[in-house]
Length: 385
Image (cartoon, rainbow, N blue to C red):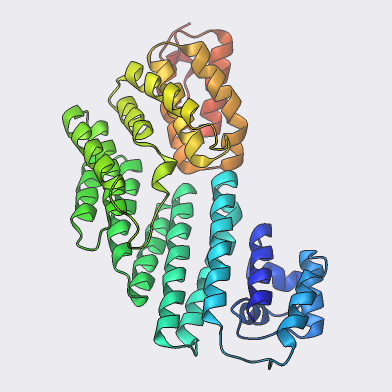
């Protein structure tokens, strides 16, 4: 059974430990941990007890080791279905943790589990189909690792992991990741300030034969944001319409790469574009309606935080400075906790929007605090007294 290895991997992921850290705490080798988590070996009673104690698992790991050892040899072929299902659940957990705590807590777990999966896929004794499933899961891990690298502000690592996801997806027989990788690269180009490149990459993604409707919806959103950054309202509006059309198509086929499409409703994306187009009143109205309509999204969620900062930027754009500063003041502890590069970029845009405006001493203090969290230069002389 793969239950012991999967549970050990899950407990390690929850704690944000690397394989090396768990091995150190349990006083076993890193190779042993990798073999256990991949399901290639069963633990001895002593190793199971050491891992249980290191993870403070309350005997759960010991019980699973005992169940796995009944009538089963220490060395055995990997049980692909159990491994893929278990690690799939772990990836979902890591995504939840990443959304609410930021990239640095999950980075080590994502990287080490990607290595374990690719090593297992390369040496699995299962049939070709089984190896394909492991490669596809490894590709999903790599894709999310790239996303977290992007959130950490490391664009080179984001691109490297995205390229690995493409390669591993192809190993598993799925070419759709190659299309989504272009969407990711468009997002990175946008954050680097190259709107023209973002538009070009988004269009290339949509033109890929392997692109699913969901990928085309993401691509159209990136294209719309690029047009908005260039001040082209008509092209932005047309891309938003295409994004809505694709989002409502049948998306049951193909891998669901990238963030869930419902994490950013079409109206929230439109509002974001309106901020870039400096149509602040329209943006503020859309944000007020849509953020109120989606109260179930946790306030410490990265996507929710990003949209709420954009809402504050829109408020500042129409001189509703009290409201804007109140929103940002409430968010600053969350921004510090999440430590997200994309959120800091939004906070810098808020600072740029509010600092030339008439501000009270209290508002100036808040802008200075926001600038410090966003890690951007702030000139007090830029604020009209």
